[in-house]
Length: 80
Ligand SMILES: [Zn+2]
Image (cartoon, rainbow, N blue to C red; front, side, top):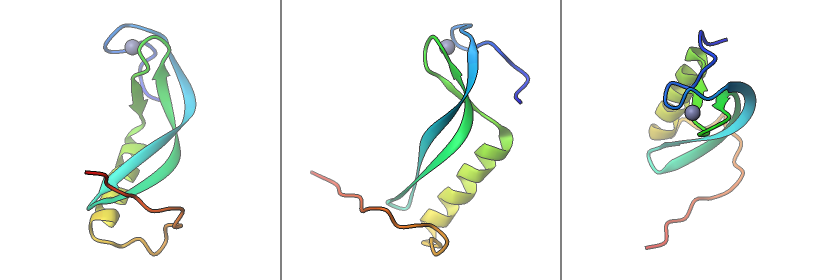
């Protein structure tokens, strides 16, 4: 648990929730479900240090195309 229970920005109450986060890297995206503290007032999310580390690892894997252990669930398109 993070050592905080009030939002840094608006002092709203923080509640631990399961959230869906999108990580992008090298034009690829990965979606994962993680626990985060979510501000009940402004919606700001606070992540545990190990979750932030997980994001960084996934981002690095996306950038280097090391996605063998990820499950392909769809494709990303860019509309210009
Ligand atoms: Zn807030």
